Amino acid sequence: MGDMTLNIGGHVDQLDPIAEAKARGASLSQFFLGDPQSYKGPVFAYAGGPAALKADAAAAGVDLYVHSPYPINVASLNNRIRIPGRKLLQQHLTAAAEIGAKAVVVHGGHLGKDEDAAKGFDNWRKCIDGLDMPVPLLIENTAGGDNAMARRLEAIALLWDAIGAAEGGDTVGFCLDTCHAWAGGNDLADVVDRVRAITGRIDLVHANDSRDVFDSGADRHTNFGSGHIDGTALADLVRAAGAPVVCETPGGVEGQSADIEFLRARV
Image (spheres, one colour):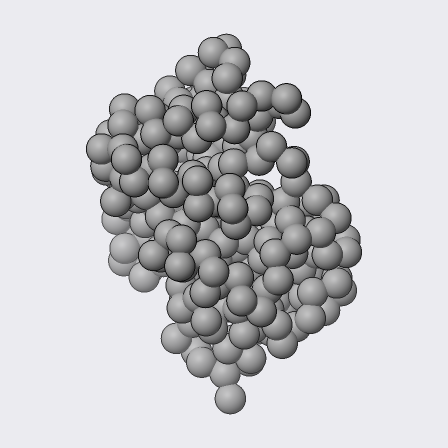
């Protein structure tokens, strides 16, 4: 018998994340604020604006999570990428607080092939030092790239050392993506324990099946049961993590509702 108290939802359209949650029978929604491919800064699509979204979500009992735009790469050694990315991240943390979001999710980022990873980790430290974090910032593990800051557990350990040296480092949490972990070559059977041994916490799970084989380095999500990740392993991971869950899977309301039910029945 499944646990109906699992706090779960989908990555949804930003126009009305509350209605999207209700359509999925969900208790949370994750969404972008504006264009996920742009440096332009957060946009509030909700009809009543940020204050109304905050009040309406609280009244509906729907938790909100903001996913930051993809171009953000605060590890980068390139000033023209790193500096606008830091600014954009700050804008999203501030905007997320305005809507009463639980957290902002950001990818760990990466460096070029021959660049010094130590400098990338130190750029993370400097970034955290300089951020005002009215809501927690959750760093998400990524699937690909050999010089990624958060693909392999060894890198995540170095990243966490750097963040621990920063002012406000305790406001930084971890988002574990199952598709990225799988594609990044991390065994799902013990990845929760191994991540927690490094970070002390898992604040959010992105529960996604993978269209690609283990350690492929490819980031292609699919619905549960149609990819390469065993459904029981997925449910075991969600149970072990004990954190809220976002399904970033295709198929809109129908596809994500099925995935939400899939986990509810098994966790």
